[in-house]
Length: 119
Image 1 (tube, rainbow, N blue to C red):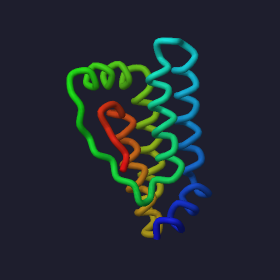
Image 2 (cartoon, rainbow, N blue to C red):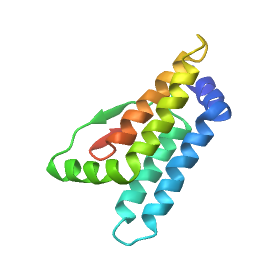
Image 3 (tube, rainbow, N blue to C red):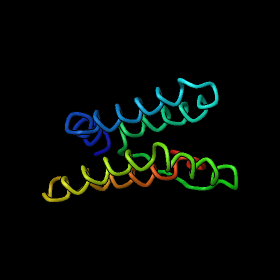
Image 4 (cartoon, rainbow, N blue to C red):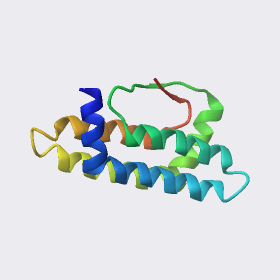
């Protein structure tokens, strides 16, 4: 199911989500200070392109909390809203529920990317 789900995901909306993460990464990498944040965006763009079969574990400490607050104010809320809207639209149909659930996973990650590991 993972391979087929990833192919269908990429064709029917995952490409848009992954490109949004790449755009956010490029915008963060424009500044020297934002390069670590941009690299984190590129790491999660891979998850946004192909999310099936991957799990996200959350952890971290005070440093990741501070970065998450800055991230949420600058970039996190638009990325999360995009994934939430697409997820709700996909959950209208029974066939789209697994894809909507993946968008909800990415929306949570868009709000708290620092301290999160993808397995």
